[in-house]
Length: 537
Image: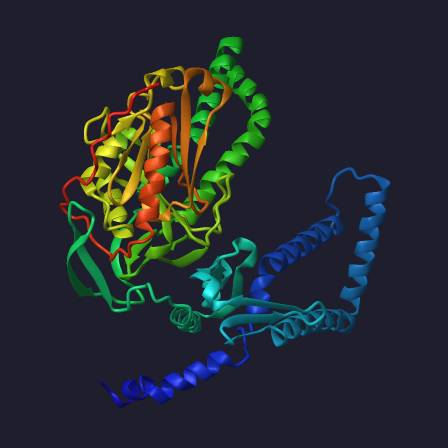
């Protein structure tokens, strides 16, 4: 180790860094420009467009205009002509405008400060309307780094502190230098660390026996910052998966139908093309919405990389807005796999999670919340990711849940009377219990698998609609942290649902009393319990 490295890692150097973090410090001087960059670029672009348009009109261009437009244009031309004729005045106007912008930016930077003190992170900003935000470190759920496009061009990053209160209570340090942002993130992670997290630098591996108890443990070194890379998702695969979506397929079907109707109505190809072109404006808003949604999905999950730091999953993704999120494994409440119909021929799956402190938009707009740990991948990759998130899960049980059918492997299916609601997949939908978790599967063509550990169950509900009561059916739902994964078994026989409710409540109560060590699921035998013989009443 060099003398410089030795001094940097000495207690004196670390104490200097700690004092710096506890003192009020400014954000990067370019922060005001980046925060208002998009608006500024839009204003400048509009002004340039109007200026060029005015010059062309002054040269004799332009079409028919009404009187009000001509009066306005004449006033603009006269004003610009005055500035062109008086260069000193024009220079003074430009300098004054830049001075005002610079003064506002300087004041914004001058009054924007942050620090970590008294067990909380604080942010002060605003010189006219002041704001002081505080987030207790004990309420911090995750800390991520985001690099929007303009920040990437200037080498800056923003640190996003996610608290247990949801999106409105998150705190953003926008912006810091890329190196300083990484330092602040590491320091905040260390200060907000919890006793139940594994220590940095080692990952605990364990084997689980048939009773769910760990049987052996080993340790392996892991980089606490970057972690061990688990997988990368090629952008080419992500592009194909983004196109294979219900919206794009519907849009293509509508376009094909429109072209067919036009050919049948007009006969000749030219007239058919003209008729289709006339019909396009009606499809414009629909097509625009679908394209924006698909492009946003591609930009969000591009360059996807998942790494294992030992006690957390480190996710990096984004094409224009690069984000780095660290999700502690002990805060994951439920996991789920989804295979849309369009991905079935390619064998692709998506893996989502529910994380404590990270909310979920039911409309599907999760741009600010990282609940997708695998946007698209093969079944083997999905099982590898699930083994990372919860090593107690058995790969054989998960594979059977994803591809299996019937009661084989300890599965309890929904009642035969459920075919009134779902004639296609009622023979596949059901649940299975292990000493560790409850597993639910549904869908024959649009497959879903949801898993919730017993210890994460906060409450259980049993619901019956009017038709359910008539058919003596019921739906059992396991309630935990909000998120994209829903653990619900619909249309069970009423007796089966009541028995499941009692048994799962007992399993959840017992599991919360047991402190489980981390474990791995490689080559684990099936842990699913054979279903008890329920009588359908």
